[in-house]
Image 1 (tube, rainbow, N blue to C red):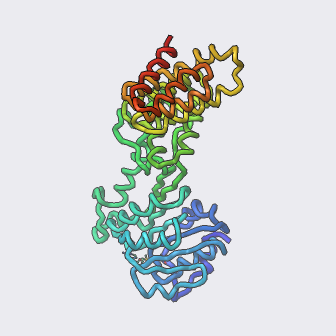
Image 2: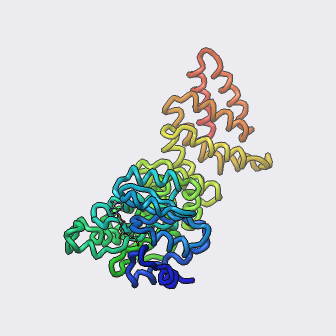
Image 3: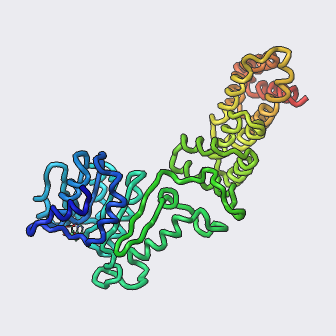
Length: 397
Ligand SMILES: C[S@@+](CC[C@H](N)C(=O)[O-])C[C@H]1O[C@@H](n2cnc3c(N)ncnc32)[C@H](O)[C@@H]1O
């Protein structure tokens, strides 16, 4: 059964639903994928309860329908699958209590007060908190042109004007010279569609540039940096690594790394360095040096990974190849580490370096074991640093 026939067969004089005819093709366009799926559908504005029942009929047995209304009498329309909660749509504490109780909605349909400030407050609170592939629909937006609903033609505070601005925000990535900085909305919105009296927003999972071909003016490094910062801010480490892995241009990664370091954005810079190093790409030693040089004292422990990786890489290296291995691969990494450690006179770091380097470079074992025993004695610090300086000399020779 389609929604329109459900609507026609569902009307009764006591419980009409208040929907305009031409909304139905729009509903179907966005809602049909959710039929028979587990779904959390939130409608703001119940009136006589008929629309919540219509949604239940349309979406099927796995749908959870939540109706919200300011009128306590609406509570009477609760039934199996239909939950009615009484509160004001502009009250964000009330909205939070809905999220706490039912989880994030897949679809929000705002058919409530239609007061512009309420519509905006509800959208601003719920939209960022919806499911990743959520649909947010606001209907009866002819009210945005009517004073009684805080509307008026081109009045900046109407929801129509807000939605117009959100079109630009969705495209912030492409503005030049950073005219508009990407926001959470930019990254999570796939479409903003205007219909007569309706605006529909389609969300999507983190929308980062995945190497699509772009116009010549497109500053790929700038956008890569923005993507990484966004993913980092979301603490989405897996996505962050994935994003760097997808990047095929090593030069571009290095440039992005430099920009991130200039900006003091150490974590995504470190991720780039690690991915370059792990994937054995050409510039892995530069990446290590960047990570080591810039981060060693600002992100404690982060540099341990490169050294462990070093230890792992040295496994299975034949003894006759060790000199070459030391010269080609180990030295470029250890030298900047040791230089920094010595500059900072950081005994704790030195101890850790000793443990790891001993494991991976047998040639250094002798001097390093002296270094370690020095660390345990009375003159520990000075002796340790002196020994480390010797190791450094040896590596630089
Ligand atoms: C247009 S009717 C809803 C029609 C219903 N969705 C239907 O299709 O049959 C609007 C409803 O919003 C409710 N309402 C008004 N102001 C509200 C507010 N601030 N918060 C929540 N609901 C509100 C009214 O009580 C009314 O029941």
